[in-house]
Length: 325
Image 1 (cartoon, rainbow, N blue to C red):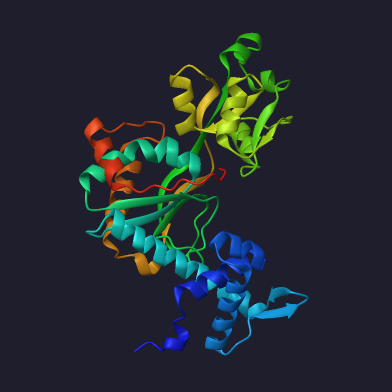
Image 2: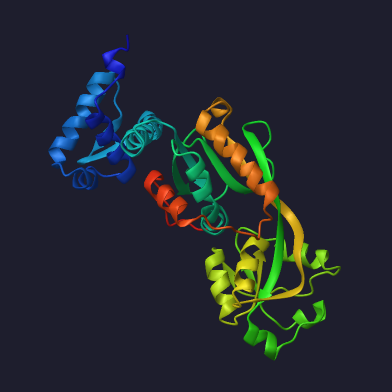
């Protein structure tokens, strides 16, 4: 039997989470559509239930103490888990929901076009996706797995290497016509476009071409979508993952510069907590994703049939947030 004292009602926990997150009873009350006095009473009730003060009251302000901050972090994760479980029941009452954290551009340009076939072959699995940048802390966020770019995370999580990164330098056809490039020396006077999360990639690319960078000044961006548009507009040379470059090249928006698909540091990985190793939807997705990475080069996308798209839309609850890649 669970002790009632340690199972506060959801309304008490939601009040605590909102007050700590906003740092204000007023803001929390507005979000929850309650009065300030009601929110204050909920917090007091929770403190009485736990037998522990969570806030310092000073000049009509409620300042969370260390216990409240730690409690709020854990409660946030628990509420997220309950919400996801409830959404899964609504979206897929037969069970089999997989929650996946993904890189935004990778999700839309590489993974997305392939997902129709997976969902068509696994109609009992509902896939929820949210975008995240960098490595995921599975202890603080509720996901079954994540896809990230970088190095092997080691033994803390289980992992599957999808493929190594290869990059292709691209330039707009108009800029290429004005400034033909036949060697590395021809790049000297052109601005280079940079991604914040890849500070060393131009050095790797130059060395992969058999040279050393002599000057890589240019615009710094935080998203590949911005970099692609800047290159199309003739603002400089973009260094893109080959699976992105080939899409733009095949559609005539960009042209490749010198050798294509140059290997650089880093790879794409699927990682998951060790306690999710035997979760059936994750096993199915892992097996399918490994096959995709082996059979289809990163630059190739094969779209699903119209029927597969229809089935995937019906069975997948997707939440792609506005984070940057």
